[in-house]
Amino acid sequence: MKGLVVKSTGIICTVFFEGKNYNCRIKGKSRLDKIEFTNPVSVGDYVDFTYDHVNSIGFIEKVYDRKNYIIRKSVNLSHRGQVIASNIDQAMLMITIENPSTSLNFIDRFLVQSAAYDIETILVINKIDLMNDKTETVKKEITKVYQEIGYQVLSISVKDYVNIQTIKKNLKNKVTLISGHSGVGKSSLINSIQPDLSIETREISNYHKQGVHTTTFSNMYALKLGGYLIDTPGIKGLGLMDVNMDNLSKYFPEMLSASEYCKFNNCMHINEPGCGVKKALEEEKIATSRYQSYLSMLDNNSTYRKNNYELWGQ
Image (tube, rainbow, N blue to C red):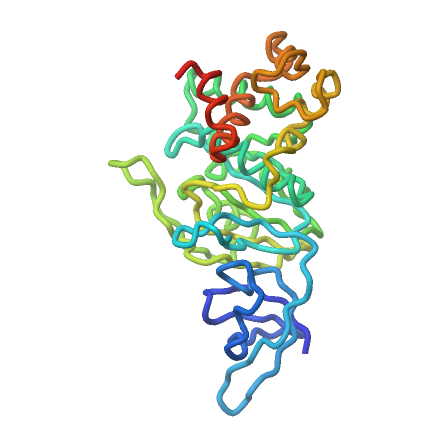
């Protein structure tokens, strides 16, 4: 039987097949053979499985090739990745200016990781109902930076149901992953789109001003309007994987176009002469925050660390 994985705890997977959910295990010792990830099966995977009706348990025997996936570095095994979800049509990264605050560096890392697998990303700024003059200004600046380089940016209030219909239009008949920090409103947004799901939500911690994990594993939900939504656990940090640092700039649309004017084909846009990207930065055609994110990502690789520090004046 060929089914769709709609939940995975790492040990037990829930596989959807012909209108029913089946709890399944990964068959045998071979479950980690030739697997470069900590979780060999993820939400969104298509699998072949058999089912033991006597013991009420299924066994996954094959995982089909993925068209794409979103991964992050494993906390415990830095050289291996954790697949958050696979076979995605688009991603929505939920952002909040405060309570909790989403850094521009985090946004840029997510965009790079998504672009590496040709996954279109929509930025969704939530909690506009809580904004004051200061945070409204920040929201406008963020919107301007990312819209100018081709990203769709939506401002919403889940609490007041502002622009939720626009979200629904973007979700129809697509497999969409929703990601972001804990507390940005991922589960609340899904509840507002389809209330009968009744996903658990919690208030922001008044002490830490951060969210509390309510989603501990990725879950895929079928939408009545057509398509699927994948709710993911909150992400604190995002380490890049499967991204060639020599070609990092190609995942920054504004840097990719500016790099056509670089003197050297292998320009890393740090301190090389005749750099088109540095020139565009000086002319304010590239946002400083975006360039700083680029350097930060390079800095994770020791090959580029020295030049990075020199440029930052450290």
